[in-house]
Image (tube, rainbow, N blue to C red; front, side, top):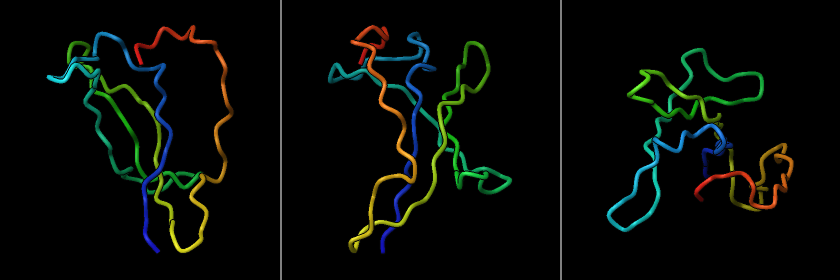
Length: 95
């Protein structure tokens, strides 16, 4: 079986001023994926997704990630899928 790293990224925590436009006109951010030094948490997450805000000199926590097996008929859905949120486009996110 193969492995993949899966997780959830909280888009609401991304400050709009940290987004930039690529040469192709796409909106983007730079993120860091950091292996947790204390190992997996109680949910099995081994990695943290963070965004560094240079101006305020702080990391912004965006989510967690874990390693999962997939392929050969095994399910690829996370153990607990996040609840669906319907906000009718009122979240003010540029994407």
